[in-house]
Length: 122
Image (cartoon, rainbow, N blue to C red; front, top):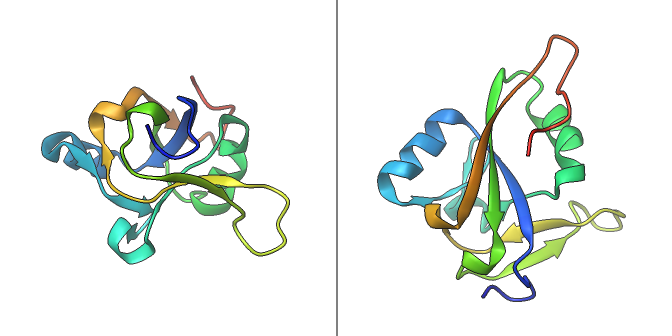
């Protein structure tokens, strides 16, 4: 089990093509939009209640995301909560290694509406 995870569920927002590539390879290695795990050092994740804010800030020009629900007990890499910037109040989960597709226990297509991102599914 990943360090400090206790089998909790965390979320990651993937672009549809990147998730399709992960299904083919068996592992997901994108950190965030346009940046790989190798470039960033970890995979950015969120808790369910953080999703709309993150999508609004970083994916306002994207029409569809694939929302991955990750069971942290199925991830071998360390997972740590960290603030997005020094002094920030919120903390976000980060996966410090590859994400096996088997750790993704649910996926949902999430489509942006004309007025922004609706409440996320799942």
